[in-house]
Image 1: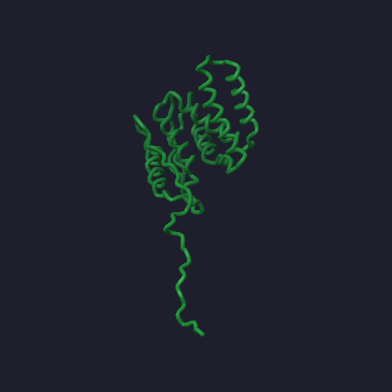
Image 2: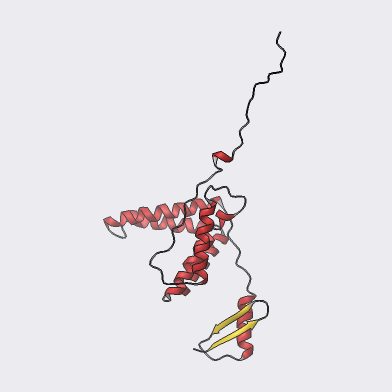
Length: 192
């Protein structure tokens, strides 16, 4: 398979792998298409999507339990339909984001290092919220440490027997950082 290394000023060097030979212009155009591709629109946060995703997860877990009685039983089929309906009810942006993630996983299949890299990217996207300045979680430093580990795996994928454990968020502000008013007796009040 022919490979071409193309240097783009200010953006770095890119490797183009092609099943057929390319002219210099075709290789340059392939890099430009990748570099200048618009960022996919993020799904953002939607309470509706969150509830639907939760419902899908609960449905999937329940379906796994009902499959003990035989895969494809009546209850299992009903839960499959429920999960599909929940997926179809999500916002178009969320559906597009799910499809994009599935495509990344599909492209990585068969190449273990690319699978590790795809999973690392997914974990970084999944934990973006934790490091936003307006998010109050007590263990933000745990997330920063975790994301640094995952980011290093993403940029330098290695064969792993296990992936770093994502921390669980501890929501809210630590009690010690909440200022409580203090009441002191006033001694200069005249008494009758």
